[in-house]
Length: 472
Image (cartoon, rainbow, N blue to C red; front, side):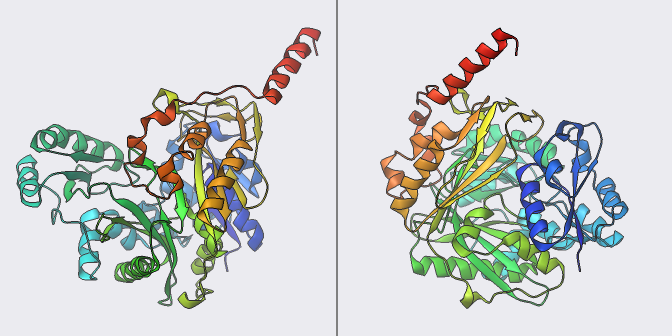
C-alpha cells in the first residue's frame, strides 16, 4: 500500500493533494523551485525538497523528479494538473522505475493527448465527434480543402494541444490562411509538435464536461457533469455542477457517453471527458483530459466524493467504493477561479505581494488557496491564486450566496478577478442560467466596474502610516 507520495506540482493543487494525503495517513513530499521556497505547499507537506534555482525547469524534469521520489522513499507520484500531468514520458519513467503514477498509463495519455487518435477512438466506440479532418493536415492547401468540404466557420487546432492553447477560429478562407502558420508556431512552442487539424466550429456551444473514475478491475462510473461555458479565450473562469442548462434526459445521455468513452480508451483513475452541446441539443466529443481538473471541487461538493482520495485508492489497486446507481447528487455548486489579474487592463497578470488575505466563510463555502498574508506571488507561473467553491440547494440561492461569498473575500496588494465576477453575477442572462461560450465576449461592459477601498483597508493603511511615522 502507498505510504508516501511525491507531489510533482505546486500551488493550490499541491496543497489540495497534501490534505488528501494527511486524511489518508500518507506522508507527502513537496518539490519547489527557489521562487517557491516560501510557498504554502512547501509549508504544508511532510517533507519538501528544492529542485533548483530555475523557476520552471525543475518542475519539467521528469527524470530528476522520479529520482527524488525514489530517494525519499515514495511509492507513488501525483502529477496534479499542468506541468507534466499529461506527459506520457513521466508516466513511462515512473512505470520503469517502480513508482506508481497516480493517473492513467503512458499509452492512454499518449493516445488521448493526440486529438486525431482520440477522435478515432471515440468514433469506434459510437461516441459522436465534431465533423473535421481525419488526420493531421499536411499543409495549408489540405486545410483549405477540408474547410471547403465541412464549411466555415472552422476551428484550427493543435493535434497535441490542450488547456485552450493552439486554437484559432477561422470564419472564412482569409482567416484560415492568416492563422495557419500562427497555430503551427503555437503548437510547436507549447507542445513540441507542429501538427494541426481542423474541426467544424460549433457556433455558440455550451461546454459540458463529465468527471469519470475507473479502476483496474473494469469498473467505470461518472460523477455527473460540469458546465464550463463561462470562459475567456478558451480559458475557463467559472465552473458549475451540475449544469443548470441540461435536463435529466440530456444528463443521462452525456453521462453514458462519457463512461463509454472511458471504456473505449482503456482508462484508469480520474479523468474528464469534454463535450460541446449545440443549439439543437446534440452532444459532440471534444477531448479527454487524462488528469485531475482544476474544477473538480464542484463535483466533490454535489456528490460528497473525495476525488483525490479515490485516485489514491485506485492507484493502490483497490476497486471503486461506489457503483453508478449509488452516486447521488445534491444541490448545485459553482467555482470561481480567483486569478491575480487586472480585468480592466485586458486581464494582464498582477503579480506581487499579498498585503492581507481574508478567506470567505459561512454555509456552503470551500476555499482552495495557495496564498496567505505576506506571500509574494511569483511572476513565473499562472495567475491562479485561489479557487472559491460555493454550494446551495438551487440555482437562485447559489447566485445570491456566491455574491455574498465574493464580497466576503479579501485579497489586497494585487488586483484580482473578484470585482469582475461580482459584475457578472448581475447579468440577467446569467441569473436566468442562459449562457454559452460566447458570454464573456458578449459582455465587454463587465470590466467597467468601480472599486473603492473599504473602511477596514483605509484603517489598515492609516495605522501603518502612523506606525511608520512613530518609528515602530
